[in-house]
Image 1 (cartoon, helix red, strand yellow):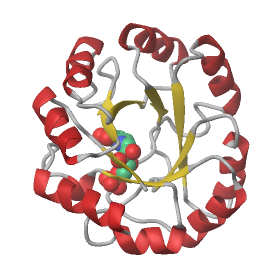
Image 2 (cartoon, rainbow, N blue to C red; image 1 turned 60 degrees about the vertical axis):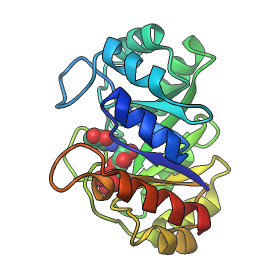
Image 3 (cartoon, helix red, strand yellow; image 1 turned 90 degrees about the vertical axis):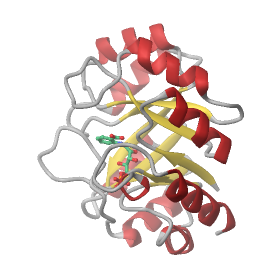
Length: 218
Ligand SMILES: O=C(O)c1ccccc1NCC(=O)[C@H](O)[C@H](O)COP(=O)(O)O
């Protein structure tokens, strides 16, 4: 079971979270159009602090494909995670990005807001390295960080439908990750809000450790 944790913002947090053994250390990267996005030089410092075998997952909420490509070339992360809403970044965009960045692995967020999510996930099957199934507030231009779960029966259907590994996200924490794994059977699990410190965007290392341990033992 792969574990992934957002949103890591400093080298010391990255070092501590990789020491726990979290597989994907998630960092928000961008030009500042969205709150808390790190510019390339700050994301690079976070990436440098990650202890292998943990790796950086660079999340872009932007739908500006040229900007994403430019920042990825500068940062050269092992994983690019695309989090713009589904109308803004399409499978064709992802295919084009992959072609120009052949060494990078790609993850795509898919919002689970109803049964149509199965079709969206199928459209990315075989195009990306991971599909991340997440909760979404309709109308938002970005997917995720809602701190709430969604209909896991739809996520389970997606896991059974696609061959691309699925990471489950949305409202997961130490208390519910085992049950989520049991019901959805994903390849990996992701957490942000429920492993944050109370009401701030920095990580609570005890919660991260509990989430990671519960997931790996689930
Ligand atoms: O990490 C962020 O700050 C972030 C901000 C806006 C949209 C998505 C973001 N992170 C992407 C993730 O994969 C989150 O971990 C995922 O949405 C789960 O979030 P949560 O429900 O808060 O655990």
